[in-house]
Image (cartoon, rainbow, N blue to C red; front, side, top):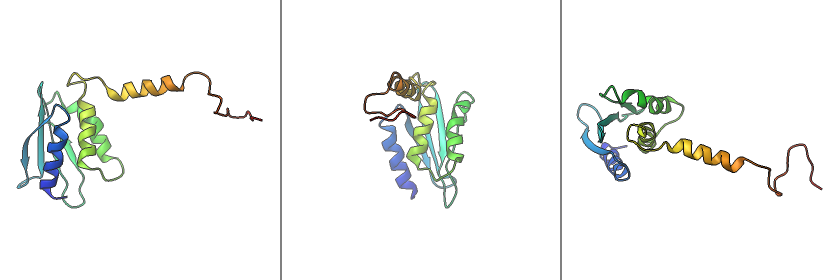
Length: 129
């Protein structure tokens, strides 16, 4: 993808969360730098050719939180910039003082699954006649 399209996608992504795109450089590296209060920063190196995205932070406080995003990027399959940014945002939610949405949805899922199956759900090993 052309770098200018990556920049546009990053700017659009920033409009829906606390991060700002503070720097975009194509000359030496295809690099996008992001920042949010209180001092949460990271950058994304965008692939050229068959490379994959790379995320990193120069802040030692932020680095441990990027492990989830780094694991996601290195997993199978090509990732889009928006997929990578969403994973980074999820990773940084505790630093930003936001609730962990994955835990909430997981608890909600289990709350829905508790109790007896409804009349339209057949239990394993029990035939309905």
